[in-house]
Length: 326
Length: 100
Image 1 (cartoon, rainbow over the protein chains, first blue to last red):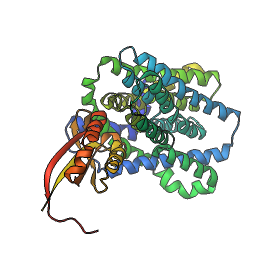
Image 2: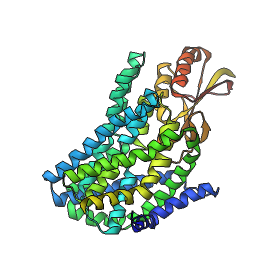
Image 3: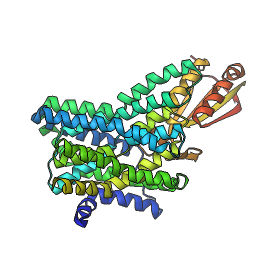
Image 4: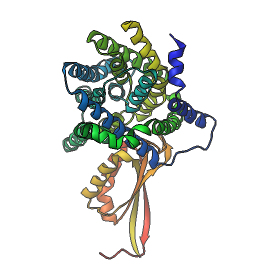
């Protein structure tokens, strides 16, 4: 694999800030980011990516190609948690297998955003509709998780308790803050088009990379603190957290190749397929499958899969793509 | 001074609504919430530094008379057993209730 591809990705200020955040924890620096700020950054990133995607969609309109890309995104979000569950059942009980499978079936918005920054760095085009693909991929894994929980685990004895659960969990699946804000910003971007984007561009376009660097600095701190929890997780799951993203991304790449997506769109599909959620799905799983241990699924997605994807995964998947596309 | 029970509960923030529902069922309508508290326990480190309710805990306390407390005790026990967390009960004396 071409070392330049890796360097082009890693020698990007946001990624270097992520590594800096991790180093701060390893060297026991007192560096912290005051609590409400990371929340602001994550809201900012969701609005920025939604608005920009919507603006591009308002340009491109809808066609068969876009529907194919969106269909592939949903397909991946449904099949990944299904086969992940059966792989995980080799070593785990149903509860933990469901929670981890759903976590890996869903997506990480920041991984996707970092992938977009990489494509911009190397000058490869991608479509704004992939943002819609990302929004569509958040929820199916939660639904698969809930169905599996109903099929493969002993339900709660208290029927009344179960009834309230469903309402709360479906709200969590389809109206969770990140999906809600992302879809909202996307629609605002579509409705306001060029004029809207021009007025928002100074905040959500020009400052974007700087804000991403700030957010990734915080993610570095958060991820590194979780690394110490990996001791309890065991080698099978750590291997899973690296092998599974590569496998899922490869399936995404093959689908992209087969359905003739562009290189940029295929990389984003691969990243969405290969990334694991650490916000929406863990929250939904904690509500619906409290028996599963968050000490397993959170460190795996935060401390293994996320750092792997944004540092080595992105160039690795792009390398696969350049081989296939020639 | 009136003798009461102070019930302190530390739970993952994501379960806060369910705990409040449980309080309401027990006719306990007054409570105090402190959000985003940090600590470590059986479910790992809670650093309260993420846009994610799973990584932060919430502290809730309420004061109730012994009769209400006795009606709720088994439900709270089941709740903690299912969702994790801590519940501490303290004998308290209340100087003055706020007038409604």
